[in-house]
Image 1 (cartoon, rainbow, N blue to C red):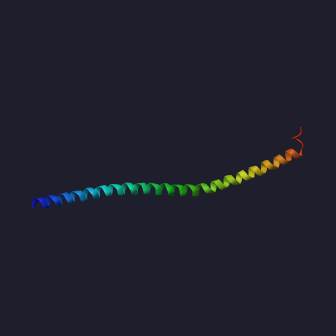
Image 2 (cartoon, one colour; image 1 turned 180 degrees about the vertical axis):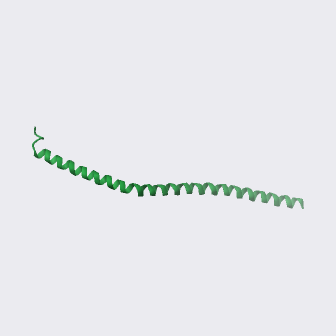
Image 3 (cartoon, rainbow, N blue to C red; image 1 turned 90 degrees about the vertical axis):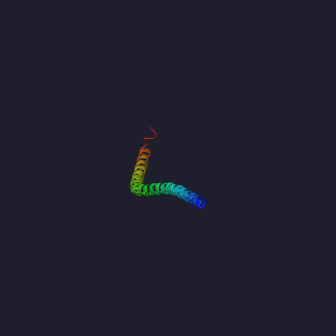
Length: 83
């Protein structure tokens, strides 16, 4: 009878140890996925914030290029390039 109780107690200990190990593993994996999800969300918000700014910068850059082309045309047509 004592041997049967010892075997059952050993089995319960093994099950509790396995439960603890799987719980720790689950927490680690869930934490990694949570961190990846948070990084993804932060990246999406950052891109959503940066898009209007980059559009404005691109518009200003195109305007600057157009002005530079106009000045270049004026400069070459006035003969300043040959002096």
